[in-house]
Image (cartoon, rainbow, N blue to C red; front, side):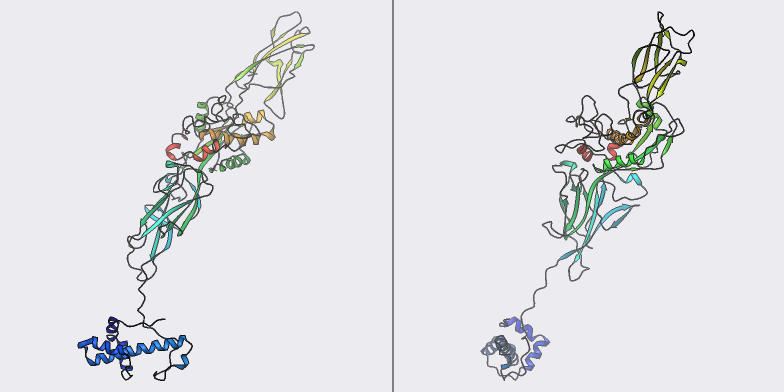
Amino acid sequence: MDVGRLTEDQIADLLASDAGAALAAGFLTRPRASSSAESASSRLGSSGRDVGDAVATILFAEDYLRTVQTRWEGGEAAAATSAAPAPAPSKPPTLASPAPPPPDDIKLVELVEVWTESGAEKTAAPAGRKQYINLDEKVDAAKAHREYGRVVQFKARAEWVSGDKSKSLAGQPLYWYSTPGGGNKTGLTGSDAEGFDSAGGAKKTTVSLDAKGWTPVVSFYPSLYGGDEFKVSVTKDGGYKGGMTAGPYKVWRMFWYHVTEMKDGSGGKFDLPAGVTSAFEAGYNTVFAEFIEKTPRTEATHVDNLPTGTNRSDEAKNYFVAGSEAPFKCHIMTIDYAQTDNETKTVEDTLAGLTWTSPDWFFLWKFGGGAHPWKVAAQYQPKNGSFTDIPDAALSTSTLATQPGFKQVKVDLSSVSPAPARPLKIKLQIKVAGPGLALGWGGGSHHLFLCTGALRDSNVAADRDPTQKSDSVHEIGHSLGLVNMPPAPANAHDAWEDTGHTGHCKKPGTVCAMFWQSSTTRLTTFHLEGGKGCHDYLRGQDFSRSVMKDRWRD
């Protein structure tokens, strides 16, 4: 430490202080050997001899302290000069000028989320979560949901590091920035991307504090792409580093579904098993869409066939409970059949006796009047005779136990009198269900239909749930725009649409749930190739109210 020389201004300041006066008094009788004293006395001029003596004493003290310091640092503290009035201190004091006060600095003390409830601003500590970007405050007007909507709002507070903490902080800057997750979709542009203040806005923003240290409300918009996640940070560092962080916020969508189960006409109902609903929910989780069943379920009276879209929609409207979740709520209704087409088959045979059973099993048409709705014509021709109609009483069927829609046709002419001469011929024209046996319908609105009666009739029991798991995913997929259906932009899916089965994916069922044909092996998930496909569409499509209000409605 270097004591250094006192300047004239420092001497004057010291003389004016109590400490200076005491120092002058204590050393007034000490010898003045320093030429500095005389020089200082002469410079004081009109200050007079007394002042000069005081200055000389101060300068003598300065010289003395320098001598002590030198000896201390050389290990000679014990050999201090005998002229000293007292033993040297353990560490020599200095008369260096005090350091200037540190510049004003602020520190972050609080980061909160902000929302409005009942007209009042509410705040809470931020929490990482799923952010359901398609929803809005109208879904549940009685309660505020921070997790709904494509905007998360924040405020932050800072205070002075030291000094008068009540002093105004107005105008002090803070810096906000977002950090995307490592697996986020790249290349998003425009309003599909994240940003501050608006969708696709700036990735960083600067704000000024108010007098009490609060920032204004800062709005952050996550991207539109399901599965993307973001952290939001605020810092005092103009390089946008460090600070306090909220999140991560992960982009999800939420939908609800209501279930109506139709009675089966035989004392039971076409139930929708929990294994089916949990499987289709899991399928949509893979594209970051959450489906939640809204209970209780409703029960519908039995109708054997609803062949047209109008028939089905009119029936479904009687049971759907929209609630405040609309238009984010779909209706899954189990029905018997939704069969529009049939085809006629001709069967001919020669009988040696009077009874006959078809060697083949037929999926017979079951809708319409008469004792045998499947019968177009039935005739027999006795030996050397002409064709005659077979009475309805002579016709019957037997049922395949494992697939009750399949029947064998039987003819019994033993009650015909007189007994037909043999050998005789029979010729039957029968209606069977067309090749497009429908196991589900969807895409026209939020009403989706699972043809559980047709499924039970055409499939063995072990195949029914696996088939319906995929069917439920498939039909909801139609209602969300797959493939090349609203709200998807026109021709958006041309690269993978099956032109032979429009509205469906050309990828096989082992690759995508949107393949046209039901099966036990069709997936409950969606294809993605090269970043494109049904999977990518569902993650990137806007399903907000403005889009869904014209889609999921009666």
